[in-house]
Amino acid sequence: MKKQPFVSNEQLQEIVKQFPTPFHLYDEKGIRANVQAVRDAFAWNPGFREYFAVKAEPNPFIIQILKEYGCGCDCSSLTELMLSDAVGIRGEQIMFSSNNTPPEEFVFADKLGAVINLDDFTHIDFLEQTIGKIPETISCRYNPGGVYEISNGIMDNPGDAKYGFTKEQLLEGYQLLKEKGAKHFGLHSFLVSNTVTNDYYPALAKTLFELAVEIQQKLGIKLDFINLSGGVGIAYQPDQEPNDIAAIGEGVHKVFDEILVPAGLENTAIYTEMGRFMTGPYGCLVTKAVHEKHTYKDYIGVDACAANLMRPAMYGAYHHITVMGKEDAPCDHKYDVVGSLCENNDKFAVDRMLPEIEKGDYLVIHDTGAHGFAMGYNYNGRLWSAEVLLREDGTAQLIRRAQTPKDYFATFDCFAIYQNIPFSES
Ligand SMILES: *Cc1c(COP(=O)(O)O)cnc(C)c1O
Image (cartoon, rainbow, N blue to C red; front, side):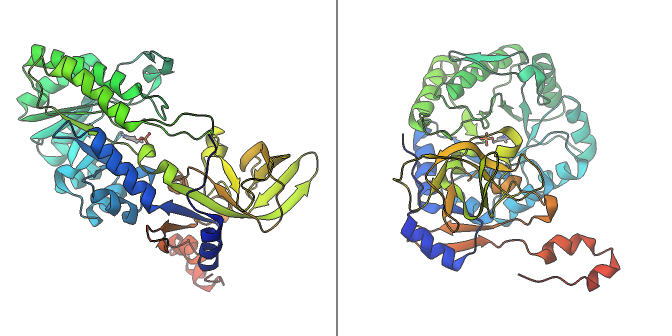
């Protein structure tokens, strides 16, 4: 399948007059259509809620759009909780799925009335000591260990993951939580990241639904909700078939009817904590070719770098690239597309076949709407880019300004001489 940018060349030429590159651009229309499709896919479950994984795209403008469709927030840190609070998402609309959690974060999550999803058996006592009680509603994260296999083969290796309770700990944990006064219980598990198959959620649901029946039989506890968490992926590669959320929702519905309904657990709410699937395809990094270099290979130097998008450098992740205005030109040039960090892994593409690129061409790096801007960092003193929203009416709105040198130096306020360091605001 040919991957097309959500922005046309004509639109982009206007936007770059308003906002200098590089910037991440988001597609309001695409985000809205997708969150509606998620809602529709799980409409069979009256208690369904998507808790958007804030870490994927921590921008209040984007979260506000998702909120209109009933989404809550999945947070795992103090500032993510603050962001959720700022958007007016509080109480049971927050899922606090953290790990190795600092005590003050449990305190703040409790203050906001968030649902706390415990990552470890020892956190039962830790939470009780920290906030002085066990909340009435509480969730536990399950890790089945071993390798996780579905019909398509081995998916991942939960036995190596730092997250969650073992099964024995889980059964003991619910018992202990009940004794300590908990009344409403949830079960959570996140086993595989970025799955591109409609079978992952249904397979995970089967595992968790069977466990819910066992918990009911052994402990007499009826779970109020089952949280399938994240892991629903996107088609980064042009030859991948994107996930079909309607088929995924139907797949979960089928195992729900097979396992939970006969056990009398038909009132169980299904929760999700998707990040990547919610916003990933609806963001792109817009960057300009500023240099070309021909040595042992052919390089195109762009004005973005791994500090704006870390996935290629960190995981060798593929992000599709469109050279704007040359969408239909033959891909007959082999390039490394590089940023300016003093790190040889600062490459958005290696040996990529692209149309001939000239200095001044705009490149759209696809699928940066989740875990893109959010993973940015300041190595080499490189600053974070702006984030821009392409509104449904075709206008562009700044939803986060770019960092300035002043922001970069702000944490040196302890270094008095900083006041005298000349820097430009632009
Ligand atoms: C990262 C994360 C998510 C979101 O994962 P995606 O793969 O982006 O959907 C959900 N829940 C938890 C606890 C996470 O850590």
